[in-house]
Image (cartoon, rainbow, N blue to C red; front, side, top):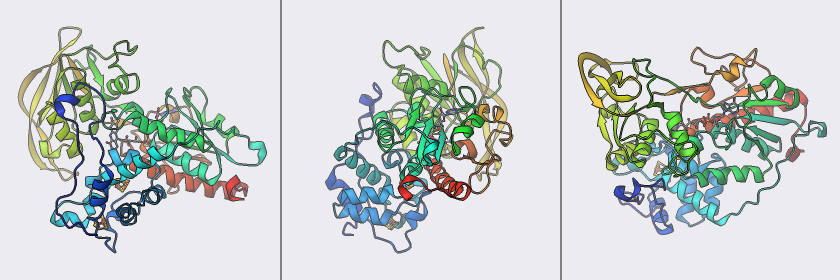
Length: 471
Ligand code: FAD
Ligand code: SF4
Ligand code: SF4
């Protein structure tokens, strides 16, 4: 460590006036000199508090030391030992609440920019590596090798599939959509996470023998029980894609969308292209209801589609749950915030949205979350808008539970598992948002990895067999 500056290096970003007219990435990435200099700010603390703050336990001081020595390939391998999607997490992890929140350098200055360095190492590796995708391995139970079906190709499914493939199992991933990647492709916009980054990770898995079957809705195209007839174990990483609504008058009007639908139209179906087959509703003033990352993503997409945008949030501005960086970016891009406001009615012209009536909220006593509870007053005001996007959280889709006798779920749809991640059905495991409800990429990935290890243990115990690479 030889960089004692209190201020860390920052990520260069595109100018707001330029970036609001396209969907290209906002953060530009850093060069080698900046990366090495930032890594040299690390004190190599013995207790490794930063690693304790990382949900998957990345060996942070070790990878930073390797960056400082310009051993970028080894730094990549060090991160990959715990984290299968570093190019993704380096971009979207809430680092400021995780690894960087625990960094000792943050006590008297800025923490080491761990996420920025993780992204640098992963991107540098991607530029130097050229995986050659092979045909996916067919699943052939007759060869004695146990094979696993992974349902859902979000971070939980990808991490589970990657670890099982590395152990030598034949893995087939079933994905309902026509593209693999889960929220990473249909939810998080490309100006935060370019789609090539996710595609690279999927190509890498395919090159390592993982087979992907898209347009396969488990519960409709094939059931979990049917999968169990062919596969020795099943992992359910089906996420939490069912949007919540407010159930207020006017919510069924033309021009009201869930953030999931709006984002899917833009990110997956490329509604910003002129000849898009799945366009978005044309709107001049969009109101986005909610204050999390999903709300910020929807607001920033609507801005790029040419609308004036207002975010409506029922608590105070300090309570906005979105990442600080996303709130800053949204404000820089000209998005307005109406906090302590709660929609009570969507105003319509009989068919389409013309505005939102909101109640003024006040702050009450602290609630279970530790934040002051929003208390509704009888004062209201109207905001003009021709489109309203509801970004109020999501729940797991009930399709898999309803189509699988014996599978159990909580009242809001989260699948119930034992400590090892096995559901009420033997051989069927689950993890990620499908179990926890809407959470984060890194937590879903961690759940996928734990499930892979539990599935390995289960298959060994049940069948006494070993995967190909372990014999
Ligand atoms: P998902 O990513 O939801 O993947 C589940 C997959 O399963 C999907 O591809 C789905 O199509 C498929 N599927 C569902 N049902 C079936 C079925 N019956 N058959 C076959 N396939 C099925 N987290 C962060 O850490 N940082 C962020 O900045 C961030 N931003 C976000 C922005 C948005 C807009 C959203 C929606 C979420 C964001 N999150 C963020 C949360 C994070 O993306 C999720 O926690 C994470 O993706 C969950 O991973 P998962 O694998 O459990 O589920
Ligand atoms: Fe930090 Fe996320 Fe990387 Fe862990 S995975 S070191 S929390 S950026
Ligand atoms: Fe380095 Fe910060 Fe971790 Fe200490 S806490 S080892 S300074 S990254």
